[in-house]
Image (tube, rainbow over all chains, first blue to last red; front, side, top):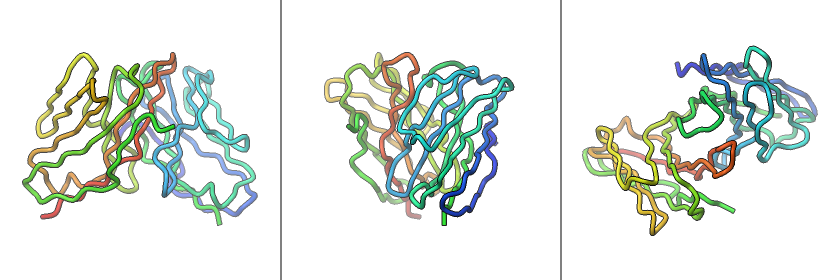
Length: 114
Length: 113
C-alpha cells in the first residue's frame, strides 16, 4: 500500500458516458498529479493540483476536468467518453509543489470504454 | 517533442547478469533524474534518483550513472533477479515552478531464470 488510494480500480462504461475517478493522496501530501497511460503511450501528464489550486496542465482534453477538495482528495471527471479514452489513469502525490522528492503513485483506475 | 527518451522498448537478460537500461535527454536545464519501476496493474514506484551535481548514485543492486556532457543516464541492476522484471521509466522534473515530471516511454525488462 503506497498510501495513495484510487477508486474504483476498474471501470467499464459506454461511449458518451461520464465517469468520475477519485484519488486520496498520501497523508500530508499537498500536491496531486493525474496521469493517463494508454497501451501505446508512456505516462501522459494530465493535470496537477497543489493545496486545492490548479498548478499545471498537460495534455488534458476539454472533455476532462479535475478538482482538489479541501480535504485534499482529488477527482478526475471524464465526459463524452470515447473508445480512445480507454486507459489506465494514475494519481500521484508529493509532499510539496514539485516532484524532486519523488512521486507516490496509486495503483490506478483501469477505464474501459465500450 | 520527447525531452526524455528511452530508445529501447524492451530488454531481456539472464538471471544473475547485469541489466543496463538507458535514458537520453535533450534539455540541459534538467537538474534531477528519477527512475521508476512499474509492475503490471500497479502504479509506478520510485526506485532511485540522481542529482545533476553527481555522476553516480548507488542503492543496493541499483546504480544510476549520469553523463551530463552526453545528456545520458543509465540504470544498472546487478545481479538481475526475476523479480526485477518490470517496466522501468526514466523521468526528470522540468525547470518550471511546478516541476512536473517529464517521462520517458519506458523499457520493459525481462529477467529470465
